[in-house]
Length: 285
Ligand SMILES: [Zn+2]
Image 1 (cartoon, rainbow, N blue to C red):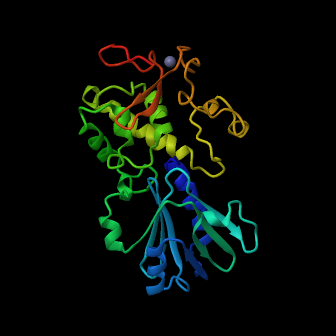
Image 2: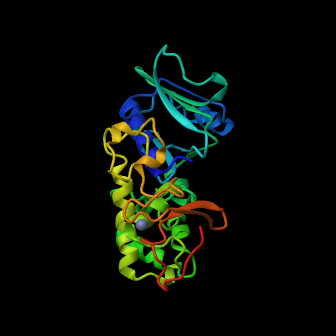
Image 3: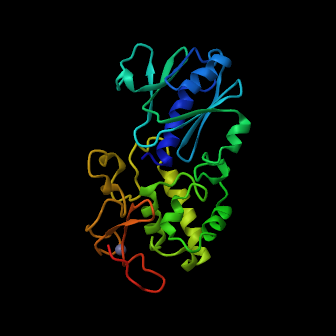
């Protein structure tokens, strides 16, 4: 599952390829998109901007329409020059947006819809920018209040709620809790308000660090290794706890634990010594 940082980088690449340029071709296997295009031809319109909102990618056209795509597990956007060989078979093509120089191809995109400004604002599944840790409009204090409102839920689960915080996926969830020294299974009601603030600050910092120019595709939170040397190795090499079950904690040497968490049974990693429960109780890995 791509996390918010991946979608942010995809949006940046699409923005560079498409924004400010007139569309010269549009094709899709989604009937609703081609019907929209029949009624409001996208050819000749400009791509005004491209943005990410959590795991959604939004392409805004000058005619007022916005193409919203969600990549789920297998979707991806590629950018090619005209005549360049595609890296996926044509049968995987779902959406093509062309301009005079480049072709953006959405492969195996599972969810795509066309919005007006009004329907976009009303689509509860697409987070508003104020919820997105990578947005300039993100409001950290409001995010702390939203976290604290879920007092009888476990904190790591709450960090994944898109209506609480957008842009944090399952890898960042464990990393954010570790860096903040908070046990992922701690109920929100057991957190001190300043701990919630530290969690939100770390969410912003860690996700933002992964969308800097040249930051690559791999999530890096642990700076013990040079980023450039990590791309072929085990993903856990660049992280504090995620993917590191039974390996020594980078801070204390205790063996990292792993457990499924929440109604979606998402995997969680933590250090029981660095991330103690407020009452000192133990959570089995
Ligand atoms: Zn530790």
